[in-house]
Amino acid sequence: MSRLVLAVLLGLAACGPAAAPPSPVVAERSDSLAEALYRKFDLPGVSIAVARGDGQSWRWQIGQADLTAGRPVVRTTLFRVGSVSKMFTASIAVRLVAAGKLNLDAPISRYIPSLPAPYRGLTARLLAGHLAGVRHYGAGEFENHTRYTSVAAGLAIFLKDTLLTPPGTRYFYSTYGYNLLGAVLEAASGRSYADLIEGEVARPLKLARTGLEPGGAMSADQAQPYTRGDDGKYQPSHPVDLSDRWPAGGVISSAEELARFGLGVFSPGYLPEAIRALLLTPQHTTSGAPTPVGLGWRIAKDSLGRRYVHHGGASTGGRAFILVYPDQRVSVAILSNSEANFGEAEALAFARLALP
Image (tube, rainbow, N blue to C red):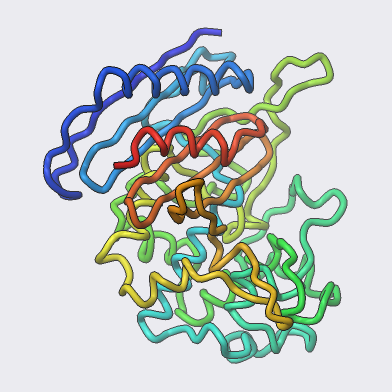
């Protein structure tokens, strides 16, 4: 398998003063990390980006976006980000809160009056923190082949089911909870989810290539998704339609833009400081037990006590991970066109090299 490795310093004057280039030791270590990740997980292709608030940024592209065509991964290659899409939905939610269009603690029946009784009293805050009791994927639901024309249409998959637990009593990770949250955001704003992604995330953060994977199709610049066959070799993944999960797992992006997204969400100007703090404040169950999640983002501290947030995403033929140090303004994004299991440890290794 042919490989391409790139480590590039970007001068992003808009983010701050010009930054000094990385030392030769840091450059060599970061290149070695990228190559080691590619080899350890035996990836068809991978794209990695690290962005800092002082304007310094590195990126690496290794391997193939399409094994058959011999198309290499390049800086503009798009990948499925899976459940990292939930961070986009959380960002839209707090932007609507800042605009006075969404109350996180109001019953969501205020926005969607037609909901079945078990769902009417849920709140956007509970949905964003996986505390609402909405179920996750059921058997055979992960690889969807049905075309849904709207977020609201996809709610029929689960709204007939009862809640798993009383709202607020237990942390239970739920993609369908985020689908419901996406529908609430549409109703609260009077805009489609695609328009919300564009207007509340992509445009203000200058993400020109980030958006929703078209239902039943892939972008021309998108990496071919791959799944390992029984013989251990990569095969093109079965076609899936992500229109059933746009707010929870339907976004595509490049590593460079995903890292910029993570940096931008926690930078001054995108959100008022008090609203931004909502993303970084862990929620609690009704018994008072803390959860590891604020609004979407998983919250953690490193060995030196520095706060960081992160989230992974798995999709058919794709894996994504984003990690951000909001106080130090460092963001890492790793994307691949395979169902590998890289994650927090690998992202932390890249972040450590970039931390000031």
